[in-house]
Length: 125
Image (tube, rainbow, N blue to C red; front, side, top):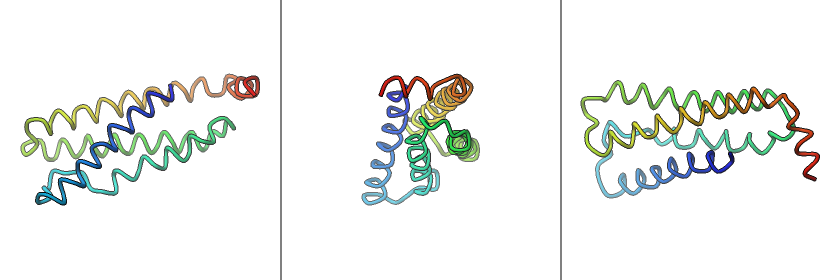
């Protein structure tokens, strides 16, 4: 399921690149995400390197980062619903769907996380 995580963040970073080039080429609109929101998922990426140690605090931090990002995008969509139109609306909805699925994956992974994944990683070595 690392590929699901990679896919979620690749699309999000792709939008960050578009946002950066959009900000250079055009006036930044009020409906655009703030730049710090694109940096938040890197905290989750840093935490996942330690998942094989079965540290529940790091897993909790990972879920909080995903939940915060999902909540912010959803609230942003609700506040600026009238101004977000066309393809931008589709992109925001796809962000919400991707981060919701990723949150579900992380919670399920956290539930099974305590069921012997450390032994699985040790067996692979």
